[in-house]
Length: 63
Image (cartoon, rainbow, N blue to C red; front, side, top):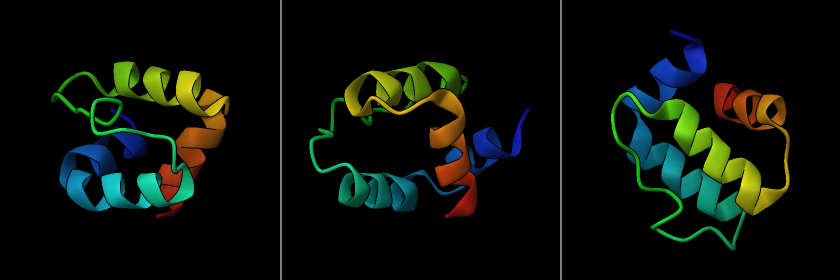
């Protein structure tokens, strides 16, 4: 498991708020998180933001 996945699991509510601040067009549906589906979540974020997977992971890791 990567540090990004650990961070998502450990502090999802805080991360969700920061992602909404950075990417204002994200909805609560876009940010639904189910444990074990971190890659699916990152894929949704890629589609909605147009950012690459590594860019999103780096942003989450730096929070």
